[in-house]
Image (tube, rainbow, N blue to C red):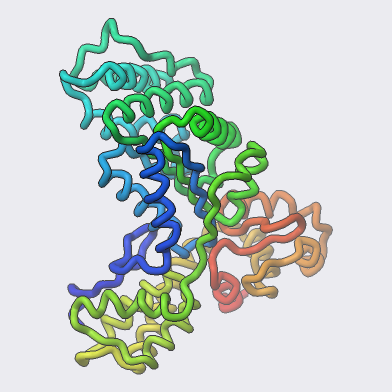
Length: 388
């Protein structure tokens, strides 16, 4: 097949040609957007799951849906080298600059001035003016240096401005488990206040399986957020991730080829895209056959081993790799911290720093007390293939 026309796109957060199996959360998000526009509250969305299941893809789909309704939208990634204060400030500048105009209403002018003060709270050397004279207007005050105070003032004023524009404000945070504790507390508190007073704002967070626990530990009322566990695709839905993009180019998959790739990928969206891409490139006929799929699966697995898995393995120190090897004996289902320590001939407490480092690097997470598991599906099998 023509590689230029290849419809599959493996990659972090890349939108697939066919976004299948996520209809319910997408519908729920649309309902929430409409509720906010009708001045009714909507709980924050929390998307959580392993890496490679499509959380970022779905979060970005949420962003596009809000933007299509002309909402003010900011999507940021936690732990990407910027504080939440700086990341949100910079993400909101573009949407606000697009709204700035001489005929702007009182609430929008106020929000612009508050945004200017928020900018000053993390960047004394820079300034925004949005091309308007904001002197003498109300607003500002989002530069106290206290994150929750400043962010609450900013989001409240932006929500009022959005209401004046007959739209809403959407705040989306990816990799939310990497937020600092004070950042998580601030977002939970502000989301709670927004729901109580029916501000025109909607929050969405995405992260690893530990995210629900992290949010609940920050604020108990976060337990009432709208949680959606994002998992691998199953059955015919996984098949559609392969067949729908090809069908748009008039290409059919043999049933045996579909079955092989779905099985090899275990239904994980990232892996489906990788194997789909390599199978397409291996095909030489007018349809995709079982033999094409065998080549594609082998090529795709090699690509995952040298990229997706290798990048994570190489981030671990030698001591951390030894810990991961001990975990890999249990596969991907999770390991008892005590059992892993026993395999390594030491007490569990002595591995506390190693576990903490692996969690901080996003390689493992703690699904429950005393249990540790890989954040990446298939990581155990990869580790077991590595020479010691």
